Image (cartoon, rainbow, N blue to C red; front, side):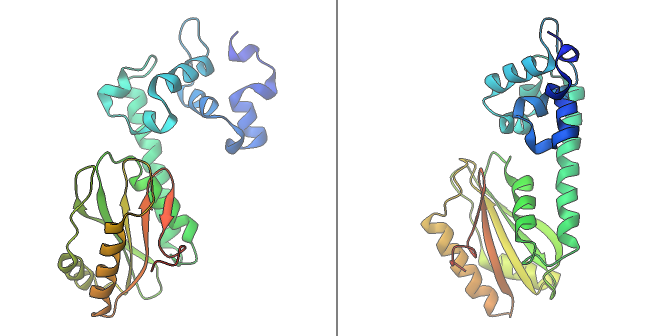
Length: 223
């Protein structure tokens, strides 16, 4: 049965308009993005098949072009649309952060970092540079590593912070495995960076670990 033949309150678009996007399943959200199905399959049916094939919505969103295009009903045009949607989301979250205190907007900070870093397939160590009112000045990737870890050099971090004239910082790195729990080395490097930056009068406000969700050192009393 085509989606147009469904009861109005069960159609993904109508359901979104009536109940909001959060009320939709992954398959329904993906169906709205796809817009149409293929012969013999509605957009929702196709979406369910794609979710089974890729394993999750996240896997579809992080797929590279060749992998993405192997999915039935997916091609380069859909890939570019998806990348544009993801980038608009990141920029929207960044604008929210730039307009306010990063400490007050802790959830916005978490959302931004997850959107920015969750889909990396290797470990990346990043920094949010803040002014004296804790507003975001810039986001920078500092070190890239393998899936097992990234080498972090406190001297290079201090050098960058001084060059940018930041008053405070928030660190972030991702765990490609999806587990955001901090390791012993995560705790050690956080302490080293905190001590190094304290010597030049710069506060470390938090360290986020991005996996399927975000772990905050500050929220767990580790800063």
